[in-house]
Image 1 (cartoon, rainbow, N blue to C red):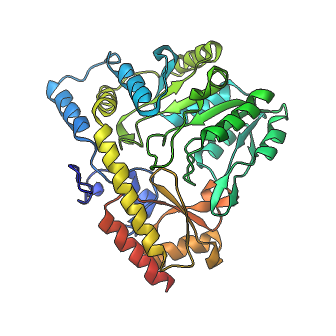
Image 2 (cartoon, one colour; image 1 turned 90 degrees about the vertical axis):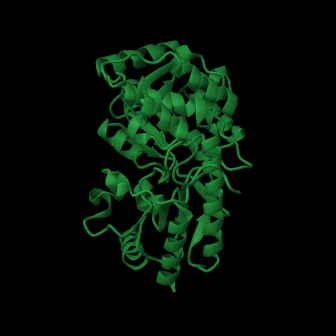
Length: 390
């Protein structure tokens, strides 16, 4: 289906120091690789964002600024209309990024040596944050059943019942496996954590990118009880491809925790404003909806292409995603070690995907692939993989 937005044209991201195509990620010899690792899109952002930022540049003065009056209403309006979640603006704090807030939550609401539960394979920065804050990593691995990942609730109950385990890091939707957790699944997780006094710290960065037939449920929308036992992190970074020029939002319904978080933000001085971030985010939430709808439609087309080409590659299986622009591909039939798989994809197929092992030992034999790119480039990359496997 044609749209007014052009996602097929190539944008040379090497014109700026984009991390996705930078030698520090691809290596000095990686200029020709299919850059499918870093989790951002290769699409120009929504026209309302570009126009708003152009107007801000034309103003010509970039001194200190307060938060624009329209930003928080734009965010809460988006959450209400897009996801049916009513959020009190007084419950929202700001931070430079979600990782910063995850680290603050770990340090504020647990002690050194306390356990933080994660559900691997999961976003690799969870591991770094836990270790660097001297907390104990407690793994409740997801279960891959009939090609679909599920939570292990029985094991989670045991882990949550240990008083040394204070926090659960939730990824909702889940990076890298693409699950958009259902309301019943989140309710079951939330009930377990509430029963044992485990705080749910939820990274919901990918919540806006969900495919038809699935619905993103913000954890804090489950009801007052769960909202008061949760800290939820949001950002337009992934949805609107503005990771380089936005901040994140922290939603905390519990007064005591919110005041503690606000005090820590102030102590670390992470609550300052960036004029361009404010403009970009407000424009995204006010006028970016049609662009995002078109992106999701285009991603569906890219996903269809992957399914089609994988019919020629019986050695590779797709873990069907409910959402996100990240695919979790199963290469275990090749019987290669993580290093061997990385070398094969790079040298034989010309792929620079994210190593599955980075998401925990459960990711051995897998790779995460970003499909938010022009379809012709994805098609070429898939043909290269077919040739490599043949």
